[in-house]
Amino acid sequence: MQKNKGANSTYFGNILEGIKSSWTGLRLSLRHFKQASQKHLPNNVDDPDYFKQSTGIVTLQYPYEALPIPDNGRYRLHNEMDDCIVCDKCAKVCPVDCIDIEPIKATEQVGTASDGSPIRLYAAKFDIDMAKCCYCGLCTTVCPTECLTMTKSYDYSETDVRNMNYHFSNISPEQAQEKMDLLVLFQKEKEEAKAKAQREKAETIISEETEKPQARPKFTPKMKAKPADTPAEETEKPPTRPKFTPKMKAKPADTPAEETEKPPTRPKFTPKMKAKPSNPKPEEDPEEGKD
Ligand code: SF4
Ligand code: SF4
Image (cartoon, rainbow, N blue to C red; front, side, top):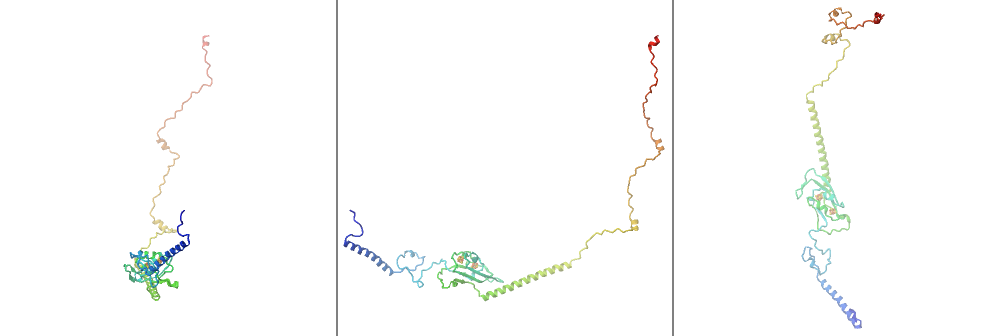
C-alpha cells in the first residue's frame, strides 16, 4: 500500500509536521529580517552592478532619497532662450498644442545663436504647458538650434495645475510693448519712405514728359469740299485728255463713186430653162408617108 506524503496520520506525526512547516516560514522571515539590515544602493542604471542588487530594501525615503536619473532622461522641457530664434517650428509640430509663442519682429538683427543662426525676432511669450505635454519629444527634434531640450528633471509636481505652464520668454511685458511700438513706428516710417519714393518717381516721370520736345502734329489729310461754283478752278484745271470713243462709220446713202470703184462682180449665173412650146406638133407618123 502506497504511503501518503506530507501529513502524518498519527497524532505526534501531525505535531511534527506543524513544527516543520512553521520553521520553514520562520526561516524565510528571519532571512528577510537579516536582509532588511542592508540597503539597496541608489546606483545609477549605468552602473554595471545595478541589476546585481537583488537584496536589501528597495523602498527609498523620497524626497530625502531618490534613485539617480540617467543623463539621457526625457522629462521636463527646457528652452535656452538665448539660442532660440523664435522660428515657431516647435509650436507647429506639437501634437497637443502645448507650446504658445508670440513673436515680435525686430527692426534689426538682435543677436546670434550659438550655432551662428541670426536672431531677428523677440519672443514676447514662450510658454510650454507641461500639464498637457505627452513627452513625445517632437519639438526637440525639429528645433534648428537645439535650444529646446528634455531634461532629466522629473519632479515638478504642483498643487495648482496652472503652475505647470512654464514661461521662457526673456523679455518682460513692458519690454515687449516697447519692441512692438518700435516695430509699428519702423513700419510706418518704412511705408512713408516707400510712398515718398513712389511720389518722387512719379514726379520725375512727369517732368521728363514735360521736357520732351513737342511731338510733330499728327498728319490728318483733309478732304476739300467741292465749291458750288468754281469757274476759275475749272479753267485752271489741266485739260483732260479727250475720252476716246470709237465711232462707227455710217454707211452713206448714195455712194456711186465707191460703187464704181468696187471691182466688177461676176454676173450671177442663173440657168435658164427652155420653155416648152404650148402646142407641140404631132409627131408625124412614119407610116403616113409610106402610104
Ligand atoms: S514633447 Fe511633444 S507634446 Fe511635449 S511640448 Fe514637445 S511636441 Fe509638444
Ligand atoms: S524650434 Fe527651437 S528655435 Fe524654433 S522657436 Fe522652438 S525652441 Fe525656438
